[in-house]
Image 1 (cartoon, rainbow, N blue to C red):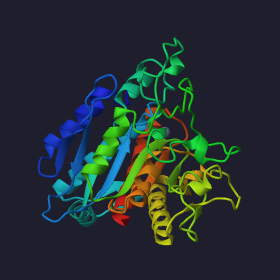
Image 2: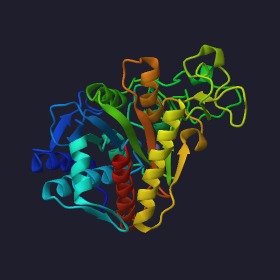
Image 3: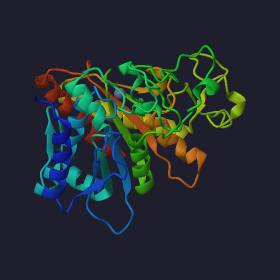
Image 4: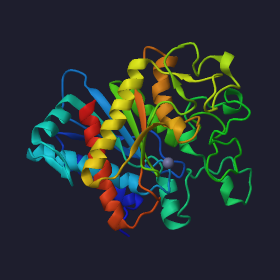
Length: 356
Ligand SMILES: [Zn+2]
């Protein structure tokens, strides 16, 4: 099988840390997965005495979106090899100079966590290819229905978690309180899952994080904040924390609610999403689109909105712009096509990092 299995993803991460000890460090995540698997991330960058800004990239959250792990493993390997050998990087028609690679890893820390949900990936690769959630059986209520296992990690973050209260009755956020929902069960409470808590731990550890990218598939988009409603930059009081707007969120094209984003942040988020798409397009012409998350479909509890919300909930937290890559046009492209998608997306991610 050309796609990496979960053992191979983990050993690739460990091998990069041991091959480039001066530039890459292995980060053991504090919590094992539901089925007891250890998880690891990589910190990549030239060591520095002054705190550095950080780009955090995660993948392998949704089990069936196999290529996300390969995208992040290759992204880390490409940058480390080019940095240590003093060369540039070429992805088809998108190229980066040796100087750009050096500047990137001197200026920034990159934290790369390619496999957030190992139990789900194993299940998807061996039992049910379309499996999406983690493998937590705790909420199955003893049901023999296999759909009643698992929680959608990317609905389990603490952002408008109580969506039945937050959203308008006629809104259709892609999330469910039903433990037997096969796709988007949010879990019994925000951060109920160890896989979700591991990502929060990384954010807490790397206080210099300013940009966060969650790699998913599919639809050839680069999503940026927000995902619960359309953006507006005129009324700071109209925001996700304000209970006055409960029951009004999540409807397109109305004036009752739109989510507040400071104008500068909106501009920066669009610029970075556009830079990503341009990096992708240069490789072989794939036309990815920058969109707010809401324009894919309304959501609650996602990683990208959670990371951005932290600063508004607690201004002592640094501001983190959140992004979600939706690569490709299907979950399991033939490997020959997936290899090309890896090049597309990695070119976009390097361009994204250079543009921060
Ligand atoms: Zn996904």
